[in-house]
Length: 546
Image (tube, rainbow, N blue to C red; front, side, top):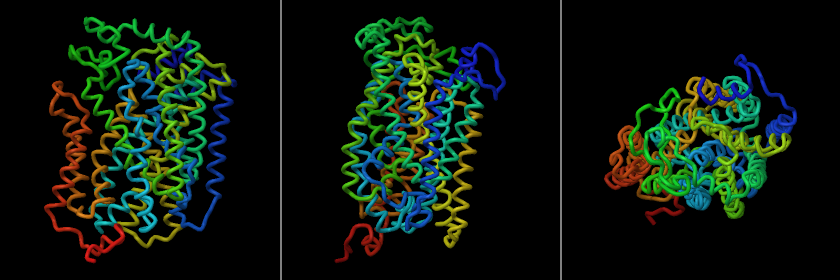
C-alpha cells in the first residue's frame, strides 16, 4: 500500500481490512450516490433508445445524431479527465501559480481540437461509412497493414491513460469513503464498466453531458468557497509567496524567492518506483524551464486533434451547424474550468490540508470537504469523479472499437452477423475494463499527471501527421502513413529513454516524435508511387484525371 492510501487510513484512526469502510456520513454520501443513480438511469434510457441506424453505428457513434449541446459537453467532459480534475490541481497544489504556464495551451484547445479536423472527419465518415479513425486511414489506402499498425499505436497508450483514470476515480472514492485503495478500485470499476458496456456511445454522450454540467457547477461553487476560506485571493497569494520549497530544503539548497508564483517553479518532487522520494537527486532540477513550457503549450491543443477518445465525437455530431455552436459553447467552459481550478488550488495551501508531496492527488476532494458543508461537499466531490468517468467510458469504447471493428471484423471475419457482433462488443468492452482494473491494482501509480501527459504525447506523435495527411493531402501514400505511424512512436520512446539535449534544452519527448512523424510521412509519400487517382475521388470530391 502506498503513502496515499495509507494516509486515508491514518486519518480514519484505525486499521481496517481491505474491504472495510470507515466513513459513512450520509450527508456526504447521499448527493454523490444520487449522481451515480442518475448516471445509471441515463445508461438504461440510452440502451432502450433505438434508431434506424445499425447496432454498431448506434453503439459507437450514437447514429451520428449529436446536437450542439451534447457535442460540446461530451467533448469537454472527455477532455477534462482525471488529469484535469485530479492531476492538474495536484500540480497546482505542489507548484503554485507557475502551473499556469503548463496549462496556457488550453486557451486554443477547442479551436484546434475540433476546428482543424472535426468537419472533415465527419463529412468523410458519412461518405465512407467509417465508424472509427482507423476506418478512415485503412479504407483510403485499402491497406490492412495501415489499420493494424494504427491499432497498435492506439491501444497501449490508451491502456496507460485508463490506468491513470482508474487510479484517479479510486482516489476520489478513497477521500469520500475513507477506506482502502483495492475496495474503492472495485467500486469504481463496477460502476463505470457497467454503464459503458450496457449503454454504448449514446449513454457515454448523454452521461458526459450530465458530467459536464456537474463539473462546471462543482468548480464554480468551489472557487468562492476556497477563496473565502483562505481569507481572499490576495492573502492566499501572499502566503504562497512565502512558502518554502521542501525539496530544495531537503537538498540543502537555498529556496528560490517566489518560486511558487512564476517559472521555472520550485524544485521537482522526484519519486522512485515504490513511491518514496529519491534519496539522491540532481542539485538543479527545476520543474518547468522555458523550453519545457513551450513543449507543453504545444502538446495540449495538438493532442486533442486526433486523440482516440475525442475523435468519436467528430464522427457523431449531426451537422456543421452543431459543430459551430459547440465551438462557441466550449470556449468559455475551458476558461471557467481551468481558471477556476487555478484559483481554487492556489488557495489550498492556506487551508493547511496536511497532504505530503506524494499525496497531492487528493487535494481537490480534501478542499471540498474542508470548505463546504457535508451535503454540498458530496456534490463537489462528484465533479472530479464525473471528469474521470467521462474519460474512462470513452477510452473503453476506443479499445472495444479497435478490437471488434478494426481487428475482428475488418481483418478476420467481415461477415459476422449482428448478434455475434453485439455479443463480442459487450465482451470486449467489459473485458477491457477488467484488464485495466488488474493493471491499476498492480501498478497503483503515485502521480497521475505524468501518465496523462505521456498518453497525449504518444498518441499525438503517432497519429497527428498520418491522420492529417490522410484527411487533407492527396499526395499521401500508404508507405508515408505507415512510416509516420511507426516513426513517431519510436522517436518518442527513444527520447523518453534518452532525451537528446538533456539539461541543455529540455523539451518533452512529444516534440521530437511529432516532427519525426511529420518527416517520415512526407519522405515516405514523396519517395513512393502516388495513390491511384481514381481512388481519391471518394475522399477529395473530384477525379484528378479530369
